[in-house]
Image 1 (cartoon, rainbow, N blue to C red):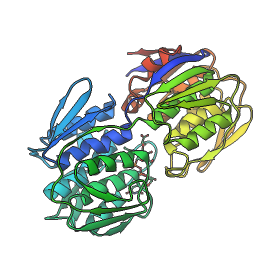
Image 2: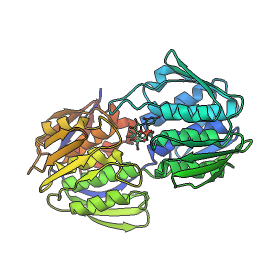
Image 3: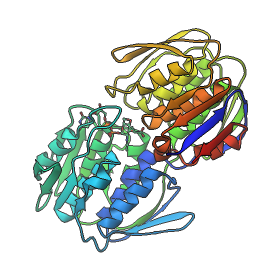
Image 4: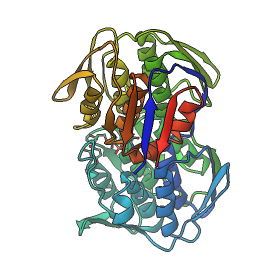
Length: 416
Ligand code: EPZ
């Protein structure tokens, strides 16, 4: 099991290129099931979850060819409509094959994703919406069995805003009979990126970027070329790193218009940010000011940035409070940060952070993807050596993080 060894206290200086967004790439890859044409993708991040999704899709018969720049999918010869447990259990986003399989082939057998460290994460809204479109869905033996001659467009109002729920229902609706209205839809930039690509494939979607999507079903979709949107969570993670260590970095190949709330909070912390085209320059000296926030759906403060900002708050010049409203158990990093000398207490879904003068390196354990990133950030700021164990969690969502950090001056190495 790989570990990261970090010797903290180094300022970060230099350029970091941001990769494509994991949470856009995963639904976009599943959209390859919707067409017999070529889906020619660029800026697909090299991540464990992407490799897992490609393996799952190849098992259905979808053809995948890739070189350094491109991942080309072709769904002309799909031979299996099953997403097996052994793959789904390692990646919940596998549920995203359900909508496309039902839409194009009228059948799917997808293992029910288990829970994960941050919460139970049910998929009841995905199922409720597909049933409303006429799918006959039974759950037995841990599998979702779905059948439907032809999905019918209808109005769907999900009980809560769900990112992959919106994406699954959107991919079902583009080939359904008639009009589908998705109300209470997620507006995350990754949902927008998927929708924009579906339109390029011939789908008819209105209201992209709003909480009400209106889709006119079409008979078939053709292929297209698409560049995956840049990863705003990765960008914010590196900005939190420099906020914690001090330094002067330039984040390149990033969008600068899709995480304003995070940029505002970084400025509140005392980070000097200048935006030039697809580059954000971040300069930081001295200890950060504390920032408080509560996570909400886009365009509010992203839950996927909560752990990273909390790591910076641990060494801020004062107290802060963080409230997590999306997931019921997304404070797994708190105890690990306290092992590094942080002073955090929690009450339900709120964490109270006392800023301390300094953290001290120690062995810590990653528990989920963004918690891992939070421990790396804390280790970069801590005095002495931090060992982050179980970093397979990190590799799921970050493309060679230690390489990007050591290239800007961090003392960080992967230990096999
Ligand atoms: C997506 O997960 C992201 N994953 C998550 O990123 C992200 O944290 C989350 O959205 C929230 O932004 C991908 O896009 C692959 P939800 P998703 O459905 O779609 C409840 C990361 O770190 N809910 O928006 O699974 C659910 O339990 C990952 O990159 C139901 O109750 O999240 C949660 O409390 C972690 N029933 C809330 O809604 C449902 O049918 C939001 O979940 C669906 C969701």
